[in-house]
Image (cartoon, rainbow, N blue to C red):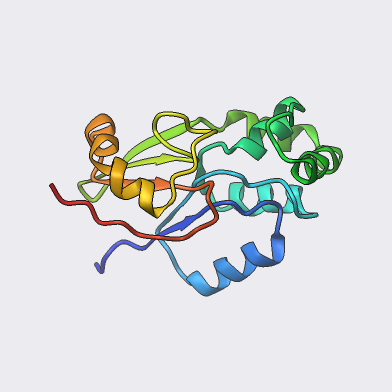
Length: 166
C-alpha cells in the first residue's frame, strides 16, 4: 500500500466551482479535512455542504459557518454579513444542522501523526488570524498546547506551510 493521501481544504465560502475544481485536481484521496468556512460570500452554500458531507469530509466550524447557524454576523464586515443573510435563505434545516454539528476543533491521528485542526487558532478558533509571521512566533506554544505533530489552520486565505523544529 502506498502513502496515505489526505486532502486539506479551507475557506470554501460557498464557491462551488472552486470546490469542484479542487476535488477534480486532487484526484483520489484517502481522507479529507476542512478547516472551516464552508459557507459565506458565494452563491452555493447548500451544494458546498452536500459536496463535503457526501464525501465524509471531516470539518471544523468557521466564523462564517457559525454566523450561518446563529444568524449573528456582527463580527463580520458588511459584505460578509450580507452574504450570510443570503446564504441562510438558501439553506434548508438539514444543512443548518450539519453546520451546527461542526466542532471548533478536531484532533485525530493518521498513520501515527497527531493532527489538530482549527479555523483560526488553538486559542481562539473562530477569531484569530494566524499569518506566516505569527506562525513562526507562536508555533512552539501551539504544538506544546495541542500535543500535535501537525497543525492545520484556515481563516487567513493565505496558503503556507511552516515547519517548526525545536
